[in-house]
Length: 442
Image (cartoon, rainbow, N blue to C red):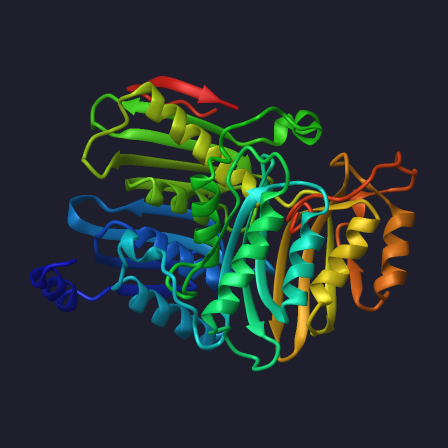
C-alpha cells in the first residue's frame, strides 16, 4: 500500500491536463503532467481508448519522478475533437484516473457485481466449442449481456457478463454459480486437452476487460507458437516486427515495434509492458496511413535493463502476441437485434453449421438491444464464399446481420469442411546510434 506521505504528495500535486485544438493542424493535442507512478501511462492510454480516440503521435517522458506526456489524437472519423462536452469529459477522466493507479494485486477478485456476473474463460480453440458454451449458458437461464472473445495461436479467452434471466441482475446463488462453473469447465476441457481449461469469477470495473484478456492469454502462454497457420504463412509480411536494443550510454533497453496501424495498438503494447513490470521512461509513437512505429526506453521495476537471453526472448514473443491478438482477421459481421436469452447460442450455431470460424467477437447489449460484432473466416482461415454469407443472412435476417468487410468474400465455392472453432468459434528499419542490436524477430 502507498504510504501516507506518497498520498499527501499526490494530493498536493494533482494531474494537470491541457487539451489544445490549435497546436496541430490535423489533430487535437492532449498534454498530461502529473506525479509519476508505475501504471500511470497505461491509465492515461486506457482513458483515450475508452473515449474512442485514435493516437496518431505521442511523446512520452517520465524520468525523474514526473510524468509529462503529449498525445496527438483524432476521433474514429479522423477529425479533431470539437464537442466541448467531450473535451470536458476527457479532461475529467484523465485528471481523476491519473491520480489513482491501483496496484497489480487489485486486478483479480472473486465477487459478482449487483448488475451482472463476470465470467472469465480460457481454453484450447477447437471446433464447435462456441455453440456448446452458449448452449450451456442458455440452458442455465443465463443471458449474455456483454462479452469480448479473442483467439490466438490455438488458444481462446473470453470475459463474459451474464445476468439471471429471472431477476435481470447478477447471479448470487452460490450453488448455481458452482453448477455453471462445473458445466463450463467440462465444455472447455474437451477431450485430450494438453492445457488446463479455466472458468473463474471476477469483479467487473477493477481491471478493464481488454487488460484482463491480455493477462489471461499471457498466463495461458499463447505467445508460445505451436507452428504457423496457413493464414500466418500467407500474410507473413503483415506480422509485427519487434526489436530489442541496448542503449550503451543511458542504461536503458530500447524496444521498437513496427506493425500495421490499427485502433488500440498503443494500449495493447503499454498494457503488456506494464503487466510484465517494465517502466517506460521515454518513448514516441508515430503512425502513417498503414504502418505504426513505436519506440520505448524501458527498465524493469528493479531499475535494470534487460540482461538475459531468456528474458529478451520472452519480451519479444509477448509483445508480438499482444499486437496479434486483436488483429481483425476475416469478414466483419454486425448483428442488430432484440436481446433475449439464447440469442448468442442461436447465432453461433448458425455460424458453426455453415463452417464459419469466429476469430474475435464483441458482444454488447444496451436498452434491450443487442449489437454484436463478429470477425469470421472459413475453416481454412481464408475468404468466405459470398453465397454462404447470403444464406446465413437469410437464416438470421437480412436486416439483422450486416456485412462490413466485403473484400473478404470469395465468389468461388470453398471445399467442404466440417465444423467451426472455439470461442473459434466461440468465440472463435530505423537505425540508432550508440545502440547494440541484441535480437530481432519478424
